[in-house]
Length: 167
Image (tube, rainbow, N blue to C red; front, side):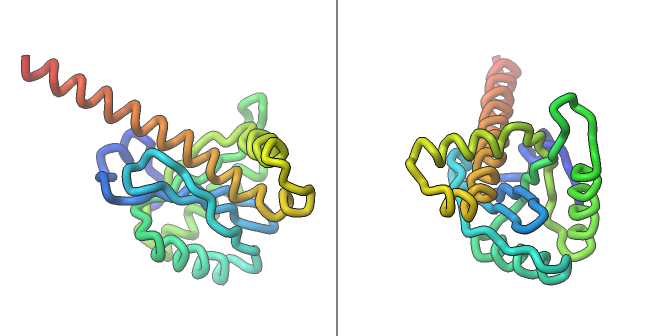
């Protein structure tokens, strides 16, 4: 299925299904998964990157274990809004994943997600070594939580619109 918008995802996903958040790094893939109520993101262990075919297989197996219906992947847009090589690499990753799976992907602006994740880990007094191991999954949680919050807002707006149409 490849890439869809967050608005399209809101119509596809149902309560009781989960969504994954992905932070695509050069050395690791950070992963987080939502709860069944689509309100809370929880980090999962990072996936060490090797080569695409192995990475894709390991990622798809991890997503299948959590019955993931869709994935939100961080788009590393520059602070000025421009798109550099990392954005191109992320888009290429999703195009390649589309050849291996029907799982829909939503691109999510991830500016400052790693910074926020680092701050949260520091506040929790996580050692520098453990922060390095956990940062990508923490960033994936921030990415996913932002998308879950947006989905919640879209669902509330749709419910209000439905009520207005009944009156």
